[in-house]
Image (tube, rainbow, N blue to C red; front, side, top):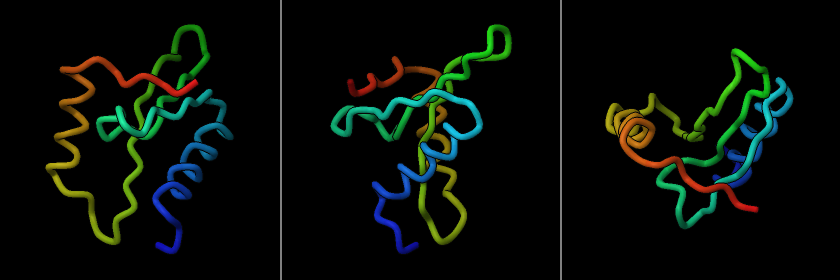
Length: 82
């Protein structure tokens, strides 16, 4: 809980990279709640993964999960920063 939101997002992104994913941070002003997009480069099993890092003391609320689910199923994925 001592990390800033940006530090926490970086920690999550670095962990995802260490297990073999390529990651791209989203643009802060256009993220729609998504913090980064990860790509699994494996030919058949791979693909895009949308990541939203939440740093809560308690369980993430249902509304936050629904918002992310809606974003993933009804909207265009966020653009990554260059």
